[in-house]
Length: 260
Image (cartoon, rainbow, N blue to C red; front, side, top):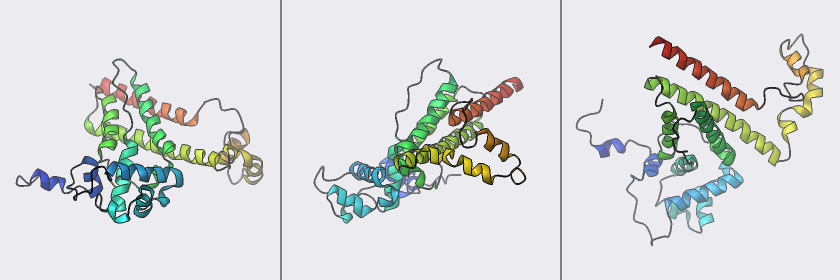
């Protein structure tokens, strides 16, 4: 429980510095001339470096250099690189949220949510390299959470059920986003999808995977499904998996309705 004597300022002071910066509630040190630098300029420069060269290339000194300033200039705006990473994450999550449309099927809305999550990983390949340290706390992230909660607002679910579904959908989006990102990287670096999906190695695997050692994988490999050498009758794997998740969601909603 909150201490009745704890002020709002005390509560806000418990936030990590980068999170506080994302909300604009940090007391900044005195700036230089107006327009010299800003948190947005610093974050945009860092994102540009990460998009082009990867997260490892991002440092306070490299960002400062790209802007034509000294490294110490950046520390007037944030305390550490950790703050910068938080702000970078939040910035790329600040994606357009589609307006609410009366009567739009909830499955379509949830698909749009998941594919938007996947899109962040594809547009910014470094995004998945930053470890998750807490529940979403920054405004850009929380707008996405609010979006999927809006989709479920009329469902007969309690708040814990809703948050569990948020976790399920966002986790699927994250996992598929990482796979899609890595597939994009394989194509961009010249390895190609045939290498990424194993198509190139199908003949070799069929020599190595013996039925006595891999009794269940063996027939799947020989059918061409494992390495995508045969026509796929179910369509896109990520879309198929998402549809099955939503089927489960729909079934759960029907069970809830029957119990009421």
